[in-house]
Structures are given as C-alpha cells and as structure tokens.
Amino acid sequence: MDTQCNATPTRLGFFVGTKRQDSRIPLKRLIVFDLDGTLAESKSPVDLEVLTLLNELLGIVKVAVISGGDWPQFEKQLLSDLPSDECLSNLFLLPTCGTKFFLFDGVWRKLYSEDFLPMEKTRIMKSLKNAVSSSGLKVENPWGETTEDRGSQITFSALGQRAPLKEKAKWDPNFIKRKLIKAALEISIPEFSIRMGGTTSIDITKAGIDKAYGIRKLRDVLGISLEEMIFVGDALFAGGNDYPVAEAGVDSISVRGPAETKPVIEAIVACLSPASRNGIKAAPTA
Ligand SMILES: [Mg+2]
Image 1 (cartoon, rainbow, N blue to C red):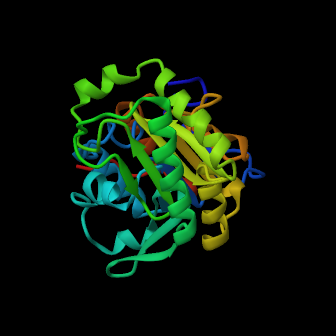
Image 2: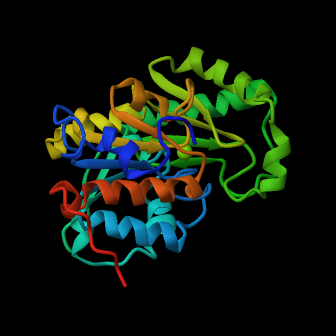
Image 3: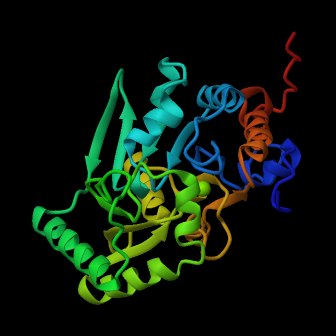
C-alpha cells in the first residue's frame, strides 16, 4: 500500500473528514471503488470478507463501484453474493466507465445507457474487421466470438471470448500485435477512443470515456461534489485506468488488491460511523 494510507482511522481521517480532523475537510458522502484488482481479483467473485465489509459500509454511507467491464460482470462478481436488503439503495453501479448507471429500488434498474448509434456500430465493426485482416493477425479458429457489443463499448478479443488464459497470456505479452491493430483503427476511426485492455483485447468507446467520466456522472446524478468522494483503486499510477480519477481531483487511496482494500474499508467505516463522528468511542462488539 502506498504512503497515502496505512489503513488506520487516524490517518484516513484526513480523507474522510471526520470531526476529529480538520473541519475544513468536507465530510465524505460517497466512497467509490474500482472492481477488478481492488474489490476482487481479476474477473473473480468478491470474497466473503470484502462483501461483509461492503455491506457494513453501505449501512452508513453511499458507495459506488466503477469498472470498464459490463453489467454481467457486476452481477457475477459482486451482486450474486451481496445480501439483498435495504442497504442496496446506497449502492450505485457504473459499468463500462459510467456509460451505464444502475441503481437499486427493490430491483436493479438501469438509469441510462449511452449506447453507440447503429451507424457507429457498423462503422466500428467494419473498421475492426479490416484492421485485423490487414495486420495479418486474424486467428483462424478462435474460442468463441472475437467481438463483443457492450452497447456503449465494443471489445475485440483476438482469440475469442472463451480463450484459455494460458493461450491469451502468450499471444501478445508485449502489446506488439495489438499496437498494429490499434494503429490501423486510429487511422480509420479517429473519432473514437481505442485502448488496449486485458491480455488480448482492444476496447473501443466514444472519445473521452474513462473513469473520470464515470466520476462526473456520479457527481451529476447524485449531487455529490468531487471533494465529498473517496476513490479506492489499484491502478492509480500514471497511465493506469484509475489515474484519471485522481487527476480529476478526487481524494484517492491506492491499493494492491483486495487484501489491502479490506483494512481501508474497515478504517473508513471506523471514521464515518455515527459514534466516531460524534467523537464517541464505539463500544466493542461481543
Ligand atoms: Mg483495477
């Protein structure tokens, strides 16, 4: 964990703005988490301990989770084991970097989805096909479909969506193949954002879509200022996909995986619990 956070309530008070700290620091009203590499290991379910802590956090403050992944990944990794109770109304989910926004009012409801227009999709698909074949990198027998339409994001997976991790790991470890395809796409569809992700994939979105975009969506929809948020993520370094959030001015805590996220949540709970905010030491639980 970096020096920003030693996961103790005292140090985190700086971020959380508790009464015990500088009163000029706004009290935090929204805690935002990255999903893969922060709440869960990559593409894996959130473990029980993190789920329990999250549920505790949801009892006292609004929480959002933002990821480049699509809604089914949230269902699989996060929601299937999270207790379905009234606390869920404090949870906001932003798949594909906030181009979709889900909230809970008895059931999970999609507030909006900023999808590509049909003509944009056609143009992207055609450009992808041309870029892959002109680069000579077309895989003849992929494991499943190579393009996935996520509504607001089109993802190209060179070996197919069901390719074994072992095969994916050795296909393009140094990004050389994907850089070729990306370079061709940047010429044919310059109006879109083209990014390399995962091990074999290329993500295409509208320009300007990153996690800072999602953060601004949270600000606008929930009416919570950036100063009242804390972000927790594993890729806050320059060039990482969480970096735009810190750059946008949100107090950010860097972690190296769910094991480091746990004490961060515990500390935030300790700082934000009503007893702490009133300066009253919480009674130890039995
Ligand atoms: Mg991550």
